[in-house]
Amino acid sequence: MKKSLLALGVLSVFSGAAHAQSTVTLFGLIDEGFNFTNNAGGHQLYALSSGDASGSRWGMKGTEDLGGGLSAVFQLENGFSINSGKFGQEGQEFGRQAFVGLSSETLGMLTFGRQYDSVVDFLAPLTVNGNWGGQMFSHPYDNDNTDNTFRINNAVKYTSVSYAGFTFGGAYAFSNSTSFAVNRAESVGAQYTNGGLSVAAAYLNVDSPNNGSSGAVANLGSSGVDGSWSADRQRVFGAGINYTIGATTLGFVYTHTDLSEPTATQYASLSASPSLGAASSLKFNNFEVNAKYQFTPAFYVGGMYTYTQATYDGASGGSAKPKYHEFGLMADYNLSKRTDVYIQGSYIKVTNASGVDGTGLEFAANADAAAPSSSSQQFMARVGIRQQF
Image (cartoon, rainbow, N blue to C red; front, side):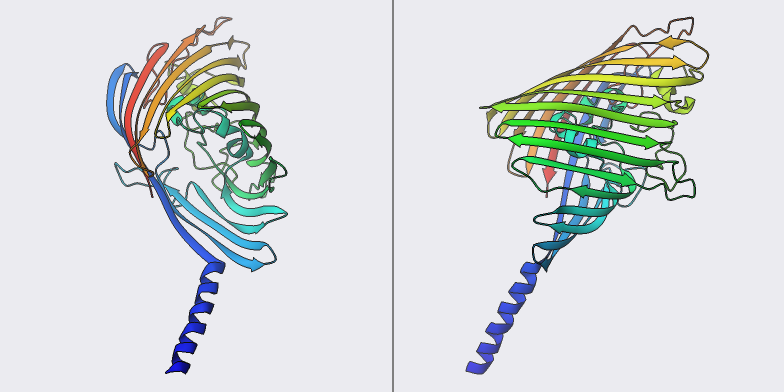
């Protein structure tokens, strides 16, 4: 009897050690809300919408201790709509992330698969849309991808450990075709955090995004509001700062997006008219200021203002320089550690919307609505609930 008890005790010790060396975690988030848009293609819109403040998701991640501070890691994560049950990210099973790699306690992490770029990793957390507000507060058409509208496929990615608050990383995404430079992506970024101060900068370049089905950025359709554009090149860079003192957090972020030779199907939704003709370039400069006040550990109120300068240059010599003014407010209350309710609103107005040099273009407002406004203004409001598990 004593021998049996001893054997059972030894087996329990080894089972516990094995369990500690390898872990798999299931996780997820459900975000559901009711939206009102005052002008979506000329009509008022009332709709239930999933994942606007935080993308609804489900996934699993795991680590295996390989010894010497080295671990094997993986993550599989999908996005979905709670209203239809369909996959998000153009119907991909693990459209949010899917990667495997190695993580070192001293050297950092190297991963392979479908992943976030450096703008999303380092700079987006300093914006409202990439942090606590969600896509209603994204910069016009999410032109800089700070709302994480698209991911990069076929990516090799490195993320450093923290060196006294300083972290850095980068990613290279292969085209996976014989045309090596068509639909490939490169990104780098860095962030420094010290107490209440956070500073970050990032750069992303995609050659011929959305060209072909197997490249770095693919399968995004041609809506023109999905964050990626069919173009000869999409280049994004920017920097930002957040500072927290007491219950108040203040922030500023600047990003620049440069689209070389965008195709008509991708930027047609910028206008109330169905077609804008050929373009040689499309550029955006986004200036965001934001603030959040934490009244209690369970309740905060935040606001933002983004000023965007856009420049459209037509291949035939016409041009337009619309200016976007976007205002947003949000209040959030935690019912528990896992569940919160919130209300948010966004108003966007486009000035200098008409084209110059005889182009006659009309650039319309679009505040994460189902369709651009039929005028230069648009208002959207949402009441929602989120639960994490």
